[in-house]
Image 1 (tube, rainbow, N blue to C red):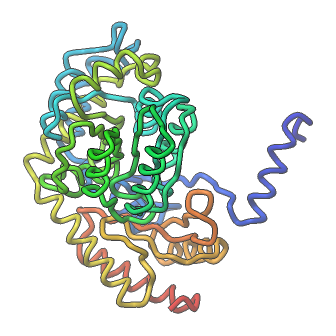
Image 2 (cartoon, rainbow, N blue to C red; image 1 turned 180 degrees about the vertical axis):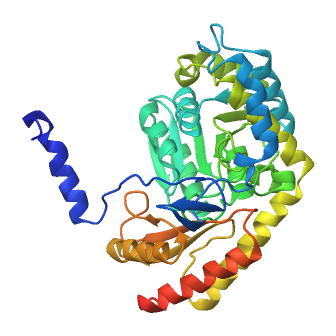
Length: 395
């Protein structure tokens, strides 16, 4: 029996169960591979962020093994004794990769977004945030104590109206626009050039989250900022190491002044132990592979285009996806869970995404395509989606 002070937990869990929003951990082997094993059965993995298949690449494995001699961890923060030559080397490589003046490592994309936003903004400032931004951005806005105004998804006209209103009201603090570049649940792209133009016009700082763009789109996989050729100098970009690059952690790129500022102000950087040697080694290896094999980026998008077109031809609603993240809108949470279960029983691992991760009544199956999926993998997946869709009267 649970102690009385903890009974509120059971009550909240009961509410989640009743609304089909309860979540459980699932044990899977080779969870980053194109095929994984669940309860002894081979399953096609359509739910991994290992977009280029680098997490198990031989070069990354070899780099991790070689770094083992240095031990398991750094033992302190970067500002004490945790800043090694390899950390500086990796930051230099990423700055070059992103064509930026500087790069600064963080322990995760979540901590990077929170650290940047809380360092940039305060109670006297305005943040304009896309309504579909990631939870880490939302939390960063809240923790900054700035006035956060949410604009409709990818709506440039609404964003301009917010800028105009702030000028009319005589606002004198900083203005900051923050947006994902590739949105993690819809798979669409921000109108980045138009947003950057507004930031330039109103002297605003532009903060972008390239977590699902870096390594996946743009020239050489350098992201949407590179693809859109954003030249606005007051742009600060966050990219993760844990998705297309197959490692762990995150980095901020931008002007050298931004790096110097964050080292001195960002609590999420100052009070966090440095990334361990094996992670740094794997990340360096990942950059090498990506620069040597840019065709991986093209293969990823070719696979995504094929799979999206197949789903659309059947009649599934893939929303506004134009990338390797392809949602299938269902709407009802219970039906979405049922579909995910049916897919799993037919050899496809594609998870149900439900509120609060997505807005109410927009539950969906979210698929993530990988460069390492073969054409036969994707054809098999499409056949299963069609069979399950008809069985559940979705087609």
